[in-house]
Image (cartoon, rainbow, N blue to C red):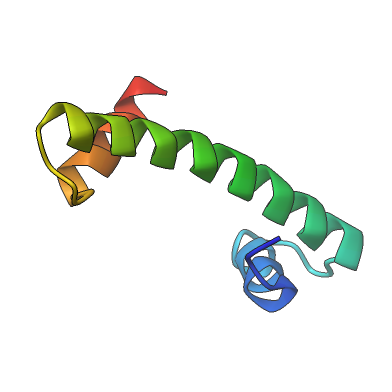
Length: 67
C-alpha cells in the first residue's frame, strides 16, 4: 500500500470517527488505492488519446466522471 496509515486515520477522524483501528485505516487505504488506480489508468488513456504524454488535471476530472 502506498498511503501510510496516519493520513488515513486523520481522514476517518475528520469524517467523524472517534477512534480508528489499524485494520479500518488499512482497508480504507486498499479501497482508495484500487479506485485511484482505475482513475489513473483512464486518465492515462485520455492523455494518450489527446496525443499527450503528460496526464493533466482535465484528464483526471474526465476519468472521475467516466467512473
